[in-house]
Image (cartoon, rainbow, N blue to C red; front, side, top):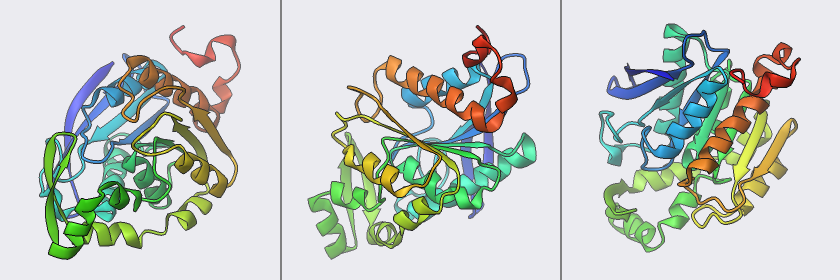
Length: 267
């Protein structure tokens, strides 16, 4: 896998840190755009493994840090779900100008909700994949528990998330509440692949059921057996990447589905 570190500007002109992973020594069949989970970064192991599996099968992957996270500029407290969607659209535009417009959108957890929401603004995308995604972004508000009440009352609060402290403002909760995700999913008009684990304790599998029931065909669901929310086991994330590449081939390069070795271009 070849890679390059990149930067592009968000809607406010701030620098967004990105990385593009490319198949070794060959032109990609297509490009995928990856949206990471809430308060995560582009460098978590699960994304690296998924990206590796995709590049082995000829798909380039652009992953980036949302505004205010990882190595990107900006203040996380001033961001929200809408700004995440805007970042995705800007990333897609960057790919289109410098490489090729993305045909695949992949999102993990809240990033999954973001790719569903952004798809209508990224016309090149023909295939969308969600991993452990909430059916409604407002799930995050409910998951914050008592902190949500404090934020509503005081206007902001410092919230501990997986051992790190983030300032979250009321505007973040208000923005989540305003999203009409059911309508977005119903009108997606893209091939949809949903991954979720029945053992996910962060975002329950009932969210996958709701997304699947709301979406129109073509749609597929794959259970991740005993995987955790962050796909900490390497085999789970490599499996997800391999399945995405095989599934997406029908939509990005159907003519290649002609020989027994098509599942892995390097086999």
